[in-house]
Amino acid sequence: MDDFYLTSQWLAAYVEAQWADFASDLHQDEAGGESSQIPLSFILSPFHTEVPELILQKLKAISLRPKSLLEVGSSLGRVNYEIVSSLDCIHSVYLVEPSKRLFESSKDILLKGGISRFDRVVARENTQFELDTSEIANSYKHLDVIAINKPATAELDVPECDLVVCLNVLDQCDSPDEIMTFLFDKVPPGGVLALSCSYQWNKKHLKNPEEQVNDIKQYFDERWRLLGENEFEYRFRVNERYSMLFLSHTVVFQREAGEGR
Image (cartoon, rainbow, N blue to C red):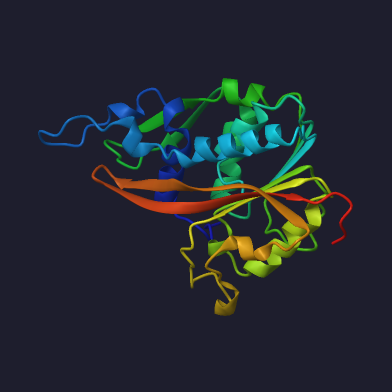
């Protein structure tokens, strides 16, 4: 079954952007000709470690130790891993990812353990690079992990979670408003929602153009308290000489305690 969201080539780009530092030989790829070796900083996207750092800082500032984590659009799981491996208070993790390729690959990386093999963006003689996922999988062994390969809709049976994360999903989905309704419904009073968007509205997916926004903060009303926001670089390597770069607007909000929906 083909994937509605990304091709196998783009899967390779996602894997590199999130997990290149776990592939010991990936940054040794040569650009060809007389070019020097490709630096790891060109391949790996800082987004996937910088955003978790912001989230963790804000959780610490409000002394919130979440027991449950829901990530909508969990992709290949790097952000999720950074959070889980830093918080020993988390017991339950819910991963919601509608893309078949991302879903299956993320389970391989996060939960399997051992050596996982993936295609390279720059393929030479059908070579692959290897990820040793043992350290990653060890962070999830003691957790109750539910992985769901479906879109986030009202029919999806997921409980409220102390920490809810949804990164760079809104501008790639059918209905941002529907996603936001789902997210708001999953954050209890006192809980935290981390949200990001690169504002690259995709007409291929977006059913109603009127749902696109210029500032994701406008989704939140007086029942939410802004804990922090920032712009982070978000990029993918397309080939050995070209990497696509966006800025992703990231916000962290806390639902006011005692407030209704």
